[in-house]
Length: 218
Image (cartoon, helix red, strand yellow):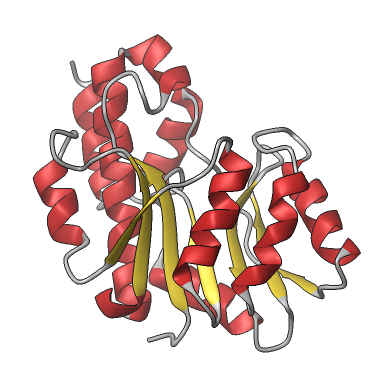
């Protein structure tokens, strides 16, 4: 297990608040089910990588009343849960890292249910030789940010998020602040039907794949 802390930045899966691009095609209720399963897989990977006591969830919303809320609450038993703070997503990311406190941190979101404990451990180990490790996403963003010192996340406040150049812009901001930046594996975010089909096929035994199969069978 890693001695780094794991940090998941997520929204509570409530219909109409998560996976809205996907929801426009499959319906918002179904999209919330997909989002909940993706978040569940992500939480379980973090616990496997570091143990519940070293895991943090920065949450927008409440698990009570969310889709699969009881399962998600069980998955974060022993975790530290923080309420997200900030006006925009970039500011919320900065504050989430700040809330974790001093020491190495590995941060992901809820869009890559194919993430494994091994991938997280690889990102964490990268901070032995770099100030930061950034994992690119196929859409131009990033799926993981590992930092030796979470204060380095302050540069995110100046980076436009959810754009085709977010990975490049984040890397440039870190380098511009004097940080050394390593890279790790590229993953595919789940934002569209095509993304969901692809990712579900890569992790057939996951909560995500089972949820996606149920949605597409309707």
